[in-house]
Structures are given as C-alpha cells and as structure tokens.
Length: 173
Ligand SMILES: CC(C)(COP(=O)(O)OP(=O)(O)OC[C@H]1O[C@@H](n2cnc3c(N)ncnc32)[C@H](O)[C@@H]1OP(=O)(O)O)[C@@H](O)C(=O)NCCC(=O)NCCS
Image 1 (cartoon, protein in one colour):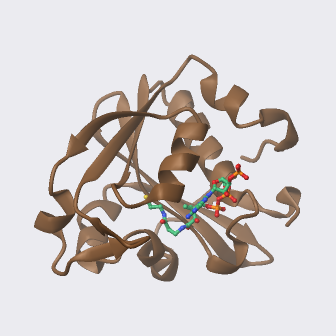
Image 2 (cartoon, rainbow, N blue to C red):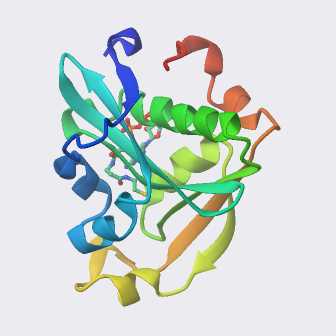
Image 3 (spheres, rainbow, N blue to C red):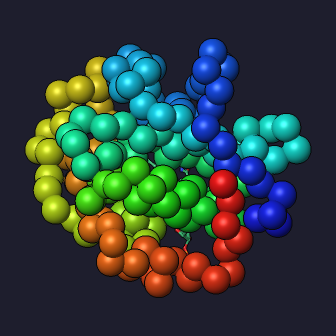
C-alpha cells in the first residue's frame, strides 16, 4: 500500500458511519452508539473505499480519547494503523490537547505493543470494564478480555513522532 494513495478525512455531516470497520474494534453496536455520536470520526479512504477509521471523543477538557481505531482486514499490517494514530495525535495537538488517551483490552497484545511503541504509556486499569459493559464474555489471543487498560500520551513531547519513524510517513490532512 502506498501511503500517498490514502486520504484521511473527517466524516461529513450526515454521511453513513462505517459500521463494518467500527465493529472490528468494538463488537457491541450498543457501545459504539454510546460514544460515536459525541465523537469526531475520521476515515481513511483509498480508491473510494473506506479502509480505516478512528473516533476522537472529548469527555474531559484537554484530554481527548481515541475510542475506536480499526483498519480493514485486508489492509492490516501495512502501516495504516500507525498512520491513523499519528493523524489522531496531530488533530489532538492542533486542538490544544495536553494529553491523548486510548484504551484497549488486557488481551489485546498487538494493540498494546503498537500503542506503547507509538509513545503511549499505561496509566490506569478500568477493572472488569468489559465484563460489566458487554453482554457476552470476550476472548482474544486465548486470553479472557476483562479489563480495559488505559494508555496516555503527553502531547508536546514529540515522542510519537520520534518513535513512530515520522520521516517515512507523508503528512496527510
Ligand atoms: C489494531 C489495528 C488498528 C492496527 O492497524 P494496522 O494497520 O494493522 O497496524 P500497522 O500495520 O500500522 O502496525 C503497526 C505495528 O503494530 C503491530 N501490530 C498491529 N496490530 C497487531 C496485532 N493485532 N498483533 C500483533 N502486532 C500488531 C504491527 O506488527 C506493526 O509492528 P511494527 O511497527 O513493529 O512493524 C488493526 O490491526 C485493527 O484494525 N485491528 C482490529 C480492530 C482493533 O483491534 N482495534 C483496536 C481496538 S483497541
């Protein structure tokens, strides 16, 4: 995938939400509905197909949270997740945020790797979050997914750009 072929843009008012993508990151349509309408939703588009998504919510002033990050299965592992994270970091910085939050399940080993590699640090555990908020037990990588690990990035340090290898990724608006 040529990163220059991908456009990342905010979803237009009234545009249909990319539910198929959103459900990759969050299996509960009810949970998605609980935050997505308060969020700014960004999509990655290539050849008129939506291949990635993330949502930025603002529940605490100055501390936006990425609530749903997903890449279409046939585009995973090609750097688009990193590109979307960098885009989210840039948007948060532009909006004057001090910190950027992202949460993931205790069983999401790859996601924990990716987020920490990008410069996020684990700061909190929401114990039994998935047990309490999801109707059926979740398992991933053979591990019961029970707790939400919260990660934060302090903005203004530039860490994300250094660790993500910024120069090989072209800026996308
Ligand atoms: C998580 C996700 C967004 C990552 O997007 P991606 O485009 O596949 O990620 P990238 O290609 O940018 O990968 C970045 C790095 O993370 C690693 N990585 C990403 N997801 C991984 C996974 N599930 N398992 C292992 N490693 C993973 C890649 O190997 C890569 O490592 P490298 O930089 O050392 O080469 C994507 O896999 C996805 O949509 N998954 C399903 C939805 C989901 O789980 N969303 C997150 C909810 S918290």
